[in-house]
Length: 89
Image 1: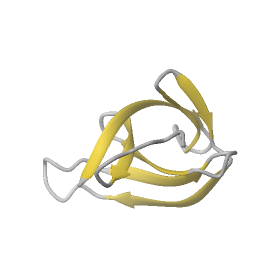
Image 2: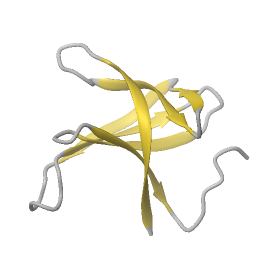
Image 3: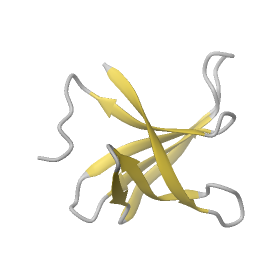
């Protein structure tokens, strides 16, 4: 099971807009990004699948998250795999 939770993201913009995320907001809490562990993109396979960038990130408390950026719609999501999610254990 995969779930996407809409989030707000602040980004570094270098040679392109929204080049990489600096922090994101979840439940009105700012979560800083310490490191980008990996990143990849996915070209839309059909009209229902938008072109997206993915970022696997690490926070200062060593938690890891995957962020998805739908480029055409400029929407960011926290991408969760699994049945449940407890972000603040």
